[in-house]
Image (cartoon, rainbow, N blue to C red):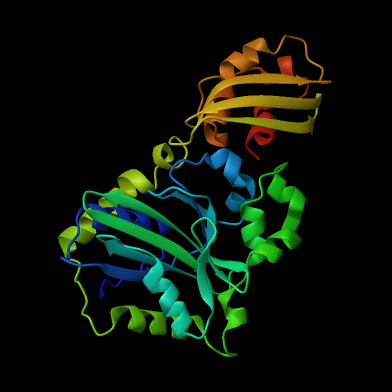
Length: 317
């Protein structure tokens, strides 16, 4: 198979490259490329960022958030994860599975878009069709930080959080544990590349093509509108002890915007909270938007002793 070289570790650029090459196929036959992302969470096209990702944790740890153009679930990437993309008519993950087997790993396609080794998941993949082309892309966990993966994808109060890290470890595995000692990720990448290429040549990317991808990364894939605003409807419940007492916020979101909000609890305040709820309705569900809207609003009249920062922390952390 022909191949493309991609040394970027920017998740927004890499996802923009996937879409660009699917829509502007530069080859008359199938081709592939291997790539990596610095620490990031990649959510599926139809997922809600607020209900799938521990946004407070990833923000605190400098993990980026991105949305891809394919469906499926959220995944965690770091530089010990290897990704692959195959584009062409009737593209499948089969060649990647065969490449893993060439390393002596008993990899099988099983479950819902998963690749398993010894009964545990080592890779997941997703697909998208455009015109006569098909894109298949997926992950390969070589030596991913499982604790970071679990924390990033464990929304407070979710089933994943309740099950904890031990449960995640029982379902996934790193490829490194199934390879001969000392086989590095660089070796794995090189051998998979050589297997898939099988002597075929490289498809060069022109500066015009790269400029188009960078433009898409900047104007689409890295934007709030794509990452958060594309989110489907979701309902969240946040509860925290604030200076006024315990406040529980029931929030309905539609495409990243507060559609409705209800504040309840044993808190003290001089005025009914309905005006505060109205002030919050229609805002983007992010800390900066909430703080701007409440900068000149007397929050403490409704929640005694509580300021905008306290309320923003309750809602967004």
